[in-house]
Image (tube, rainbow, N blue to C red; front, side, top):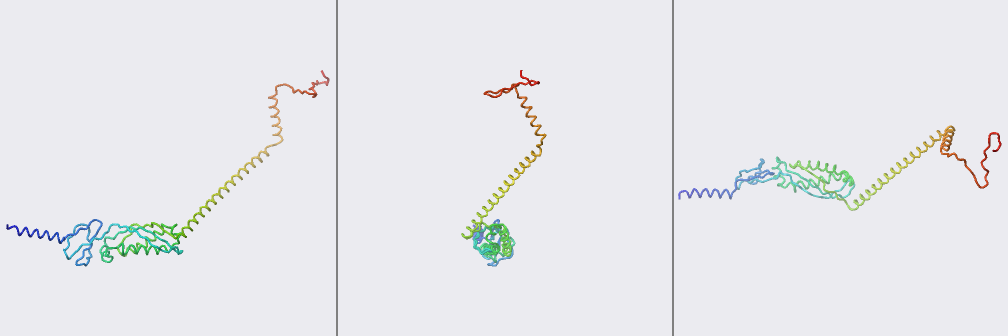
Amino acid sequence: MKNIPAIASVIIVILLLLVLNPFATIQAGHRGVLTTFGKPSDEVYSEGIHFVWPIAQRLHKVSVAIQKGEGDGDAASKDLQTVHTKIAINYHVRPDAVVSVFRDLGNEPGERIIIPSVQEAVKAVTARFTAEELISRRSQVRDEIIVALKERMARHGLVVDEFSIVNFNFSRTFNEAIEAKTTADQLKMKAERDLQRIEVEAKQKVSRARAEAEALALQRQQVTPELLRLRETENQAKAIEKWDGRLPTTTGGAIPFLNINSNGSNK
């Protein structure tokens, strides 16, 4: 019975610990900011278990893991076309800037900084390009937006990990104009290719005609009287080779073939 007060004391202490909970845990991907009666300290608490004074102190968690944000908005291009831009961004809080993010941004960097900064950067960069350039120079537009974003976000301890332009949307009139221009460019390219093909074919025909003319001219230069007599002799020789030794005869009132001797008398 003498141990009952001691046991009761231990139970009371355990209950107090459970109720007051003087320990706080910081999970992976987070940092902690300790406040004493609401005032944040300058120390950044790392992952793990930390002791806090019940009632007086509280350990607040700030995510330093990569977070994803998406947004869209309207802007005007250099040629005064309305551009609806949809973007996606990955960012994280710099671990050493956790206290300022908690104190200055209320631990809500997405709402306080990311969305306004993205909208401002997109509008500023979009105004430097025409609507057509926003399409043809999309990677350059993205890079310039990233530079503008980094400058704005770095002042608040935020880091841009990835940024991408999901889509550009323009007015229906502009889209129809772009489609018409694309069709015209395609037709122009086809016409140029057809013209090149026709020119090549014409040059080929001229080359063949020139070659044939040069061949004929060369043949004419090679035909001489001696060559003609040689060809005639060759033809006669071929005719003699084919002759079977019979003399030609005629009928139907033609003059018969006469054999005349050397002194001119008939036998």
